Image (cartoon, rainbow, N blue to C red; front, side, top):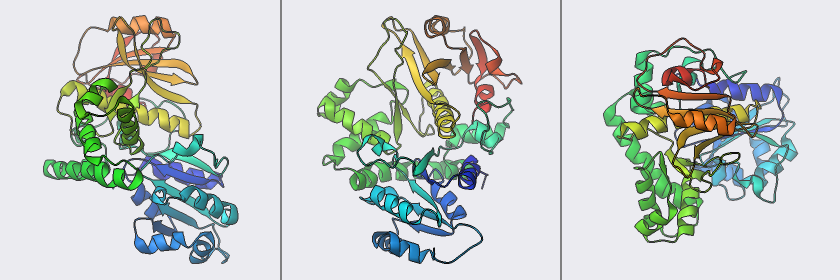
Length: 397
């Protein structure tokens, strides 16, 4: 196994915080391996015996963990896939309030565990959320938690780059590097997500139609979502399509990228773009390259935000004249970095100049896939420049 950045992130968390750690992320991204490795008591809600222990309530779980026994260190209790328990929020709140001073708690889930923040029963002050992502260039180069936003550029070796590009960033297929295994893994993962997880975690009745939507979106990574067109394709309402795409995002199958429109004249405001979490099945070079970059940028902004280095968002910019830049990283509600992705060398996009002037973004890059690594600091430049994609990605988590 390759060391993961999240090992250090969680170790730092439990060394300095009393709050529970929520670890969320896609299926098969490595959450279970990490929870098993760290925990003194590991429970998986998919296991019937472990489920019974949880359903008996906080006091029974405390007894199972022997929390009344003095120890040299506070034991770590990991509850994996706990989001599948209908009353998981109330359970964790009660357990933490009753026994939080006698142990440390790690809760994991393969659906978004921050979704309830807008709801009524706040868990304010009881947890910190960490979002686990597949491997990235930066994590392969330096698996330590980032202490600052940007790192010095480093050269990733060709074998690691090829493994990441060809097999995706999910640990098992990337490490096995077998095309046969990858195809089986992809088919099983999509089937599990679109059937079992949707069935278990939602109230959607028309599973076949939602499954059809999932397969359509699997071919449209990096495309704009035209909800009315999708609704016609699968014969449902526009509101249903919006709700189902939210479910697919909730289950980490993909994510929506919304347009940035503040201080941009005639900007598009409503049409999001769609990206898969796994770029390995995408055959089109341009779409694969953009999805590969999108996964890295999303990981960077969510990691920086989770670690308290600022509040970051990932957006894109497009106006009614059809000028577009693929990505905009927003830092503390202020446009910070514009990034246009190209698979091969080409002239610098005029849209970078235009939108840097419009947004006031500090940096503007045209990141190119087929350029070799250069030992430069991309973020030393203040005007639009062409940079190697692998150099830019090496400076991120």
